[in-house]
Each structure stands twice: as structure tokens, then as C-alpha cells.
Image 1 (cartoon, rainbow, N blue to C red):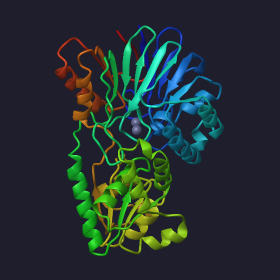
Image 2: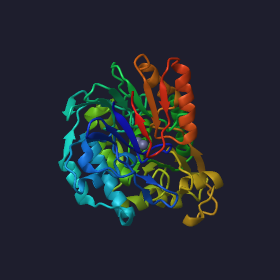
Image 3: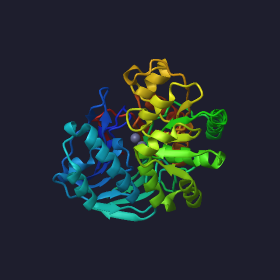
Image 4: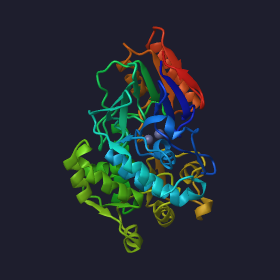
Length: 425
Ligand SMILES: [Zn+2]
Ligand SMILES: [Zn+2]
């Protein structure tokens, strides 16, 4: 019987790392990092590369891939990953090394070593390693993200969701759930206790709010996560408000270029082409110093105002009530974005009172609790184990109780902690 060892991501969002073992060697599902309050990276529990038949990386976010290069200091096992995941991860890991290098046990050479062992996954193709069969489909979360179906050598059937979104967005179609029989579901629970408001309402609200500011001569700053959220926002604004000038800056701009290169994987490649054609890419300080002086929308990283050009624009725009700051990304406690929402000021940036309009919009790229439950429902006829990971305790517990309500039969629902081991029956 296969065993699942939780190396990270147990009762926490992030640091995903799950080791699936049957016989001697196993498959590692993600190997990510977390950030504690002081923003120092925390790594998952150790695993010896020699004990791995292969590694699967669900997507490019650091909480799924940030620790994986450690395995390639000495390791040579194949790593199953999509091309866009590698392209995006390269930027994110470079940035991670620049900011936190002092705390990280690898360098860019180990990432390059990882890349040289990559088996580039295409959705729908099967890959076999030491008796494990791996198959992936789109998870709808960010470009290149995948749901992973694994059959173990003894025939136990597993689905690992990674991070998943079950609604269509501007850039991606919802997760592609294949009609297969599944014995064990390993599911994320970031929003296991939360229902997102309907996306079209949130978007309408954001569009109207942007329009109000622009039509009265103001400028709108939208700090956004560089991956997925920025591309969503430019697509939304360009389509609904074609007369508005849209600028994109920082890492958001670089990731948009990667999205453009892989546009075939997007929901509507020709729409995205048009969006990018009509978006102004900020190339440097001479652009940056000019654009905020006129009515326009500026989409810039970082989404939680932890750095990047969004800080510069915030300082320039925050002092006038004509302007607006619209936050569209999750704001973790203790981040500047969170502090600004709570207190309307940001002393460390010299903003003692924000005069610009400030509002937060829920545009998550994670499924809400109804979406997560729909995944369980899809496979309920064959499910025997549901393992709830990648969520705070409250979220995971609520999802667990909903899963038990949905499936009356005897089914094992686990909310493992890190270092727990589950025998999958
Ligand atoms: Zn994640
Ligand atoms: Zn993610």
C-alpha cells in the first residue's frame, strides 16, 4: 500500500511537499517554501534525492517549487513540469535569491541543474517512471499549472490538485477534471471555509470604480501579483474600458511577456494578443516618472506592496483624493498592503494619511469552498481517502466536515500535520 508523508503544507498555506512512496522509491509532489513573519524563508522537511523516482511540480509559485533546487545539488531524478512553469519559476527564483539569498541553501546553478533534468509535461500525455504513471491536466490557477493524476505501481489512483481554480477567468479556463476513477484525492484548502462573491460582480464593481476615477481626471494604481493577477487585470480593463490607457510595470511586465510566449495555452489567445498590443510596457525611469501624471491605469508588482515599482507609484499618487489605489490580490497579515487597508497609512513609506481612494477586490485564483467541494463530488463514487492540505487549520477543518457530509459512506478524511504519515488504503 502506498504511504503519503507530509513534508510541508500540513495545516499551513504554502511549503507544499508531499512524498508518495510505494516500494523503495517515491514520487515527490512539489517542494516549496513558506515565509515567516519576518519574511525569512522556511523549508520543508528533508528528503534524500536517492529515495526519489521522480519529482512533480504543480506550478511556478515559490510555495510549490522554491525548495526544489536543493534536490538538484546532488540529485539526478527526472522532474515533471510544464515549460511555462520553468520559465516563470526562473524569474521568481532569481528574485527570491536576490532578496533572501542569505537564507537559501542553493544558487541559480542548482536551478539550472533542475532544468536539465526536466521532463516537459504536455497536458494529456502519460509519463512512466519506475512503475508510477503520471498524467496532468490544466489546474486553471496560473499559466502552466497542473492537476496531477498518478497511478502507483500497485494500481492505487491518486489526484493531487496543487493549487486549483474551478471558474473561468480572462486568461485561463477552469480546471480540467478528467473522468477517471480516483482512490485518493490530495486537495488544497486555501479557501476551504470561504465562498468568493460571483466573479462578474466583483469585476463590474472594479470596472465602474476605475471609470469614476479616470473620468474625473484621476489616476488608478492597481498593485497586483505579477503572475496571473496582472494579466487578468489588463485583460479586464482593456476589454471593458478600451478608451483607458493601461500601463504595466515591474515583474508584472516580465511575466506578461512569458504569458504572451505561451498564449496558445490561454483561454483566448487572440484576445490576449490584442490586450498586450494595446498595453504600454514601462521600460524604465524616464517612462515611470511621466505616466502617473495623467489619467490612466497602472498595473504594477508587488501585489502586497512589499516592493517593486508599485511602491513608487503609491508615493506619487497616494496624496491626492482624485486618485485611487485598488488592491486586487490577497493581503497577508503584516504586509504593507494589509497595514494600509487596516489603518489608511504607511508610516514606513512616509504616508501618514492616504488621501487617494482605497479599496480591495476579491479576484482570487483559488477555488472557493463550493469549487473545492465540486472536485470532491466529481470523484465521490470511487474515493476512499481525502487528504486536505495547503490551508490554515480553520479552512481545512471546515472543508473536511463538508466532505464528510457530502459522502456518507466510510471514507477517510485526513488533515495531516507536517511529518505525519498516512497509509493509503
Ligand atoms: Zn500554493
Ligand atoms: Zn499557487
